[in-house]
Image 1 (cartoon, rainbow, N blue to C red):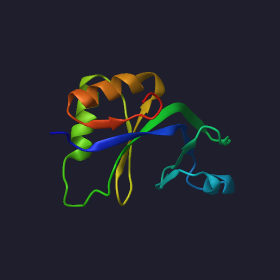
Image 2 (cartoon, rainbow, N blue to C red):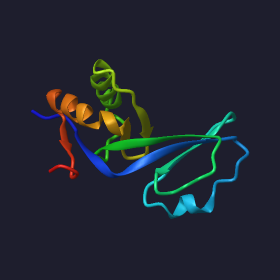
Image 3 (cartoon, rainbow, N blue to C red):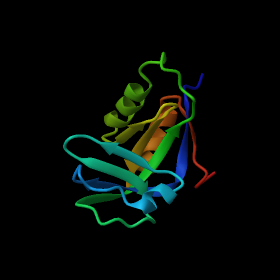
Image 4 (cartoon, one colour):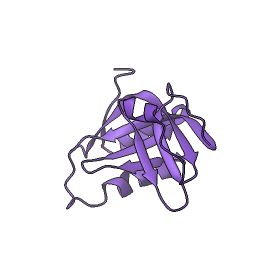
Length: 131
């Protein structure tokens, strides 16, 4: 029996780092998918690589796997299990959670290995790039 279903998003993403005082560029809000995280120490913005930002640092070439939801708050261990499967394959992740679901970003060159590992662990992975 399959576990959760994950879908590979079509976009390639870049993770940007800014000082916490940086004003969020208006173009970020025009992206179809974007993520913003702010703490006392930093501002991080994740958005499709097609959007160019002048950031302190940028890490590009990430692909996102969306855990299809919505996932209830009573569900436990989903992100832990997925990250554990990928860690066993030495695949680094960047995890993002929203109200309804989780996103696991992996470097593009590790995507095929990530999909294979997740499928072996009985996750259903939809990848419209190749299917």
